[in-house]
Image (cartoon, rainbow, N blue to C red; front, side, top):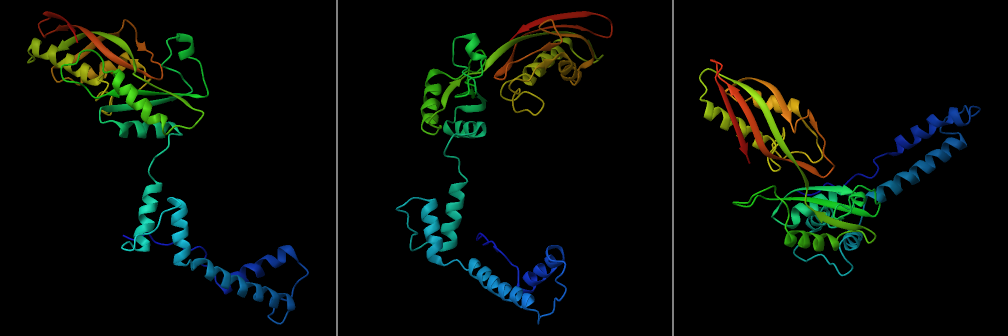
Length: 304
């Protein structure tokens, strides 16, 4: 589909003269003769005629000029192939202009990092932070020239613990961004800061729920909700820096089919777990106490 050329100005002679006549009362109230025989009206019409011709020429851009514009947008030695028409060359150039090739904004860093390596699953860019530093105070200090790119790699088969980028991945991404960053920017590629989470809750099971299956379903639901890759409300991974509230755990447990109701949810013994801007949660264990309709108690502690 060809790219439609814009109409730079579609005003006609009548439009221009009408606009000029409408300005007369406000600019020159004593000018009351607006007939065509008036010298001032004649001058307005003459200028409108000249303006209409100029507008017509503005919309008529020669092919040579378009080729020159395309050469400026591509590279000095660019030339349009003989087999490519002008519309196709314009379309290709516009598509190329929309591609990200430089890392300037936080969105640029995130998009480029995602496209740089297929092992990258999620990215968060934290401007003005040096999260690669080993100094706690420096990591929390605002540093205008620094940018930290937080990377969550794809899960590895049989991998234990939270997903973190290895040295090879971090090095490759650093080199990739180094060629695309602004000259004065210092960039860092790091993994997320995981906060270990232990969840305890009291559950009342439905009458037809096998206790072992119910406890396993609850643990699975919690692991899925807090997963760094597919957790959260949208299923795209727990959001970076988003605090974890006990009220959310109530909602997750209440949606489990074998659970009748939930009481006394504790997350690390508190109601709210705060996270830094590059922080994610990692469920380490669940301590669940369940009761069936007969009041029989079932306790289970599961480590991830």
